[in-house]
Image (cartoon, rainbow, N blue to C red):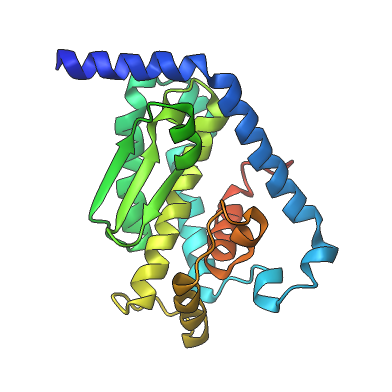
Amino acid sequence: MGFISSAIEGVKNFISSIMNSISERVNVWNERRQQTRERSSYIRQIEDFESTYCPEVPDQELALRVRQYLKEKFPNGIEERLFQMSVDELPDFFMEIEKDAEEIMDVTTEEVVIIYPKTEEEIMKYGCGFYNIENNLLCINGAFLYSGNIDLIKEQIFTIFHELKHARQYAAVERKKDYGYSEELMQTWEQNMKNYITYRENDEAYRKQPLEMDTFGFEELLKEDYYTND
């Protein structure tokens, strides 16, 4: 236990030393998200399924369930709840949210891991977190939980639902679950899984491809009550 405590303390110190870099990177992400919203005239020029997020009925209903959960979980707002918590309480709290999210979204992961990057490069590589299709694995970036930055910690909450939306896509495509999606939509997702574009290849194309358009669009639905001025 002493070794683990020492390791976590080392992570905290490291994260504290590079918080400016993390904050700058998050600002870039937020600017890109805002630019994507504002570039409607440009977005209309691309294919219909890329230009507009039009959730099918199962996701409209799912978004309502998630939003209701968030209202009940954070009756006085997310920030107020987070301000009341110590940094060391956050990992268990987020694992609790993840477990609830799996139940609400009707998905099951093989494993959920909070990763603790050791370098600035790793922090940026992992982003807020990610879902690994091959291993059905969800990873949450512990650096952001220990950052002390409420905005970053808050973003992690929505990341959980974003990444589990990928798990839901995968379960639908593999016919592991019948969520009620149209055959056309599932075929679109399946083709995208075979031709996935990473953000390193092209950040704009990454966000506009069907899988990410769906998850970012779904995430925006959840954020409407919390980022109304963004």
